[in-house]
Image (cartoon, rainbow, N blue to C red):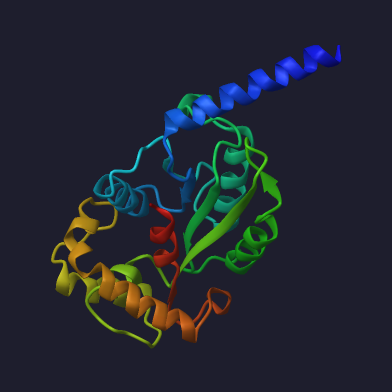
Length: 221
């Protein structure tokens, strides 16, 4: 009986190594977004530009709706249970990211706390602990794009961010594509400005400008 178990264990390990080799050496990342199109389309552009395998970097909107707490809950469930329709196997990732805006969400801070409490408590299919990271933007994702063009430090509303962004990206509409290609030549500038901004204000405050997109882009390698 013991010999049979040992043989099955060796076979399972062999299959796992083969699967890892098939996926390549890249880190396996699951990204669940509040938005249905804007953030997913931007991140898919990043994935294509960096020639990352879709099997390694899965990007999708939350199936539980746009409330940040539900975005976190869906990301956790998707990791644990997988989705056969999307060909996502349970626990087949090394890191999980939940992407959402501050907006007017009542559960914003609770979502940040839940994500932090989950991080490094889940194990993947290689029995490794998995980071679970909230990628928050205050007040909204457009602040990230605007930082490519302006070094802003004081709070602005979502509508003002959108209005000012359209000065640099005429005709900008949420959900449309090509936002990454339209801004990528200023990416390093935006990262520098955002990191300086984040050094002043953390996501928990939820009032001052903040954006975690540099952290997510650094993970997409």
